Length: 241
Image (tube, rainbow, N blue to C red; front, side, top):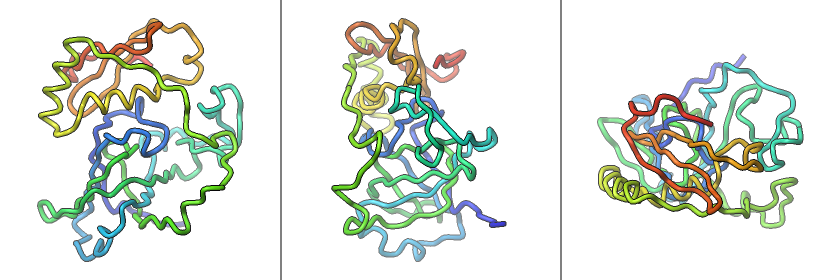
């Protein structure tokens, strides 16, 4: 048996699993920070800032207790066709391990802890980080690689518009969190976070997800998506998804 301990944890805008993009770098405005444990000093990351991107090995800590499934239904296949778990990036894996490549923006030391600031992350707040490795484009960028049912990025992009109140709230949150909040929300919702089986249905229900310190509400209509409001966390009785 292996005894693997986290080397750090993630601080992220994503406060729940629903709404996180299914792959890294689809939402470029999504920022996150890895805070390494006190055990690791700046010596442990010396030279890492010379790399633009890094690999992150992490644990799907919110779904690990649910076990794994030998076959799953990938969203890219409409959620209707089963394939083997090892032919997917499903969270329901034997060892509940995840792998992401993200942009490394900066490295700082804060309160005697090493912090790595990331861009384009698909990581849930509180995610345990197990290892970090530099991304090497000369061996890891393979232009002619075959990717089965996911050869290309999703091509259908939903139109996202904001209510007047949501636009004002986005401006306020942008100042508070030092992020382009309207762009972040637009990029998240353009990926259509709904379960795959619902994307083919006429959908009139309202949806919600948690970002930073607020709850985001939106709905679908014939023109795409309308962002309704950004409200304090406590005001969301139960997220619908």
